Amino acid sequence: MHQLMNEHKHKHPPQYPYPHPHPHNDPTGAQEMIHFVLHDAHDSVAVVVVEGVKAGMALNGWIMDEDRMMNVDAKQDIPIGHKVALKNMAVGDTVIKYGIDMGKVVQAVQAGEHAHVHNIKTKRW
Image 1 (cartoon, rainbow, N blue to C red):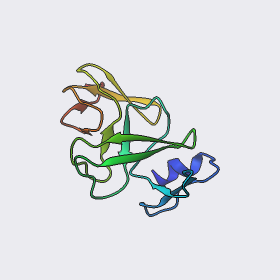
Image 2: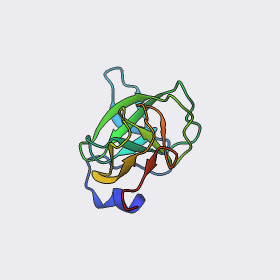
Image 3: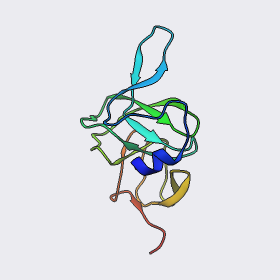
Image 4: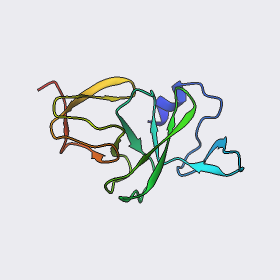
């Protein structure tokens, strides 16, 4: 993922390791923690980049192509490196990650849930 992120030019590229404050400050001067990243605002899943994501947490995500933030509430525990669903998806829906089709939903998934091999499969077979 580090290589992919370096291929895109952003005003404020993230620093490793996560977590880190996002460079955009809110009006009060506080900085936002990044919990997940996605390339395109139309992605339906994003990659969790911190350990310890638990059900009930409010998560902040960085949309890299637009250099802006978004939010989703975690409905399940999600391990680092796994995907979080950004929208409700029904069986048969296409899953978009990094702006490309990465598979289909085989078990309904709600925004904030763990999106992984139990509910997403490739379309290749």
